[in-house]
Image (cartoon, rainbow, N blue to C red):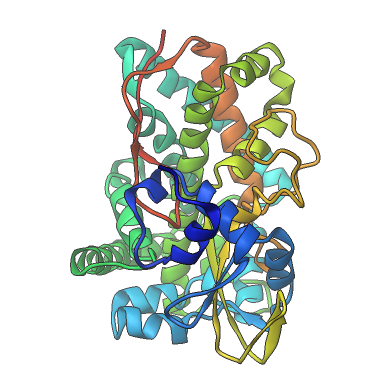
Length: 406
């Protein structure tokens, strides 16, 4: 017997989620948006699910801070996880955020991203050739996760034979961002940060001695800083390199994996995209909306504010539910319908405002090339068993998707 929406909203607790929620959170998100769109949590913070509320918070960096020191102190204590997640770009406010973002964006210009396309196509085609030889594959291990690791590895100039640990480090560090973590996840996250920092010390020393092209090599650009401007501190440099790998890896893996699973579950839309390959750009946007790779964001109020008629004091924690906002019927017609030609589609998968994802153009390119070339090569692919979810609420994706290529 299904739980009534009002009861779903009343019972919702981010610290005590059920297996059903991880499988399909959207009924709960709909219930919250309809009955408790500004949901007070047991922690004293609020969980926001309406599109307009999220946009308002994203765009006001004065009233809504991204600095996580207060929030992460009780969670991580004096640890490397605390140091990492309070130093990286995404969890900082201007001017620190502005300075680091400007350096990164300088290496992710439209011209630079266009220059990556030939190598990206060659990479995808190599992966498709390898999968064709196997017949039965795992869409995550054999395809989706392999693409962003290579792309970000190239951006940072990580030698190919040194990329093996990158995915494991990323999963462990981002896994520690879940709302509730146990001792094992905490220990794995700290160990991953320590190993990553140790590796980066060596990589940065080599790149300092032998710089790359700052127009294409993000690491060289971050080491040098802006001409006549500020440079990153040693700690900022290390942790923002980790951030780049993690941000570019997990979310793009999820975009590609979620896309292939969603298309398989919607054969009419899959066939339409195969018949009309020019729809790939709108299809990627719809995948980002329908199954957002990153489902949650966080802010903290800096002064007394009012959201949805509820007054909140300074230092109130807010959880921004991107997954709910991207299915808000006030913004998206028939929001639970997946349509590869949906337009307009002003989703929040990359957030909004000054913190909008710095790598979104690159992620879109990776998604478009991966999905379009996969469908052209294997139009009759079918899932071969139930996909295995990653067991996360913040990052929505799969650990494994068994597939027969047809």
